[in-house]
Image (cartoon, rainbow, N blue to C red; front, top):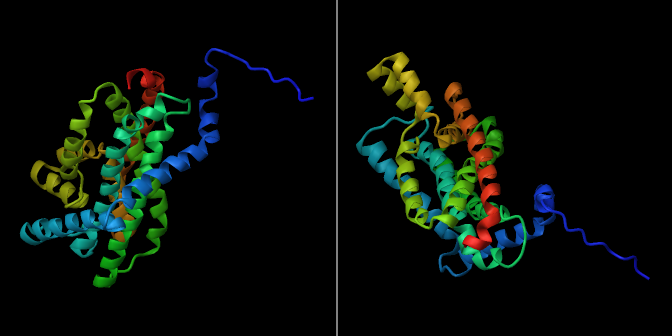
Length: 288
């Protein structure tokens, strides 16, 4: 005879085992991620080409307008198109991940309201789609390097760590916006504005070095330094500068104070996002 099994009902037991449940439900994470990837590409006639068209058009427009007409300088003696591409790839990943993760819980309302699982799996799995787009779009960078005969250095080995930093930069705000979108559906209208505005306040079409030097020249070294540190509070500044440092190589260096400040804020937003999401997810099934 089989041994009798005891069912224990204990208040707060789910909260205690939350992080262990995340590991136990890892297959659900993979299933949701794979489903989102299939849905994104299966019904499109161009398939994975859509992951190339958007960054290619952004790179082309920025290169012609900011590099050609405005005459903004490149960085580390690299071709302007490659400098823009090195920033466009992480920015597009961040923008797509933020948009998809913020809508993920609402899009899976039927699943959320029926069964228990750690809800954090849903926005986390949606980021995988953006990561796949990012990996596909990296072929643009490879093509530009071959076209310009511009070869990377050993710094490219640091790129996987910077990809993890980009994921953290997207996941923290993504969790906050996900929780807010569930309760306040108006945030669906705000997120595209945040993404559009963020493109211009991040060093995508221009380099951080150029902005730093301009601020110092116009406002003085001390005030320019302070304003640039304030600018570096943007988490994507550190991510983009890191990508450029790794991809462009050369004699260029980080502006370490700004990079460290940007990374610290990324970690703060990540922890804040996890805590806020954990606090609000218990009511998702009722609110949604």
